[in-house]
Length: 384
Image (tube, rainbow, N blue to C red; front, side):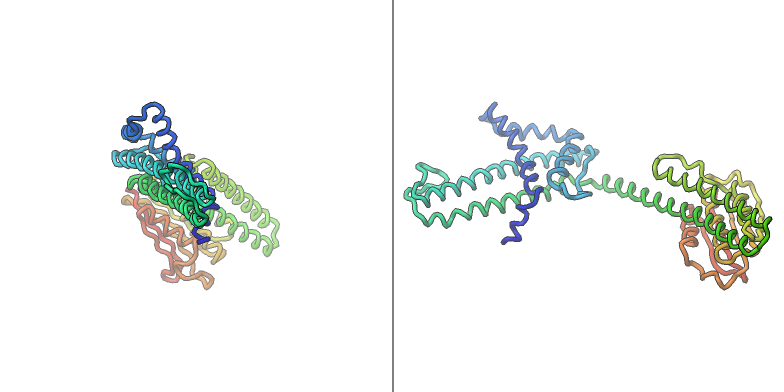
């Protein structure tokens, strides 16, 4: 019993009642104008509900007053886009009127009934009372006084819960709105995944190069080599800061163009960075890189960056063979290095997974793993 009455302590219970009473106020104003035709306000709501913007207003009211504690309630706040949405808005407006009348009657008559029972218990029943016709008072009527009040509590809570359920049904998003929201959410998730890959590839590559260069300079004991290592660390760090600033700019400005992202035309920078880290890079580039579409060229750059980062991280200063070929409407990118015991099995690590995901998003294929005594990363991207 106590648990059932706990909603009386919730603020939304009373905001729901305020929401229910708004049509009663409108009806009351009309009755002052013309009491002989009380149905006119309900009739005027039919053309009103066909206005697309009315659905948005009703949705905002329902969100703020019926479900104020829900972060993402299933109640639409966009104008009606179809006739189905408009008809549902009309039904909702008429339903509000019905609920308002029932709520107004119950909230007024149940307390009055408790008052009449109290007066009857005190031996002073009201004369000619149509609600409770009692001719002679008696103290036993006091036992009935709590029942109208308990009924009032259940009516207040129940009406609020019922009108909220109806609002979810009639003001809820249509299938088209649900699809649009799903597409928007998917785009947001894809953008977050892309940004995570960008940070992983760029910052991970820079840190790997810096660690390898610092370790080599410490053990070499050659001032000239140390100077070259520090210069490589400086250049790599500057490039990583530029990439970080660009990614943060994307986060700050969701519609910022991505044309500033590096492409395969900048691959020499990656190859030189790997060489200064001690790796012996043998690169072979064939075909017109300038004809590679932007998305494929940008993703190819990141794939090459991740592949070289893995070589430096797991194999160290080893010979690396890089092949970039553009032919027959496809981009073929391959990175091979001698297989060492420190390289994990195929398919492990977020870097290799990111390579496969990048290739899949462009309709291509990625192969990573041992191949004839080497560790191979080979990616094929279609250009058409």
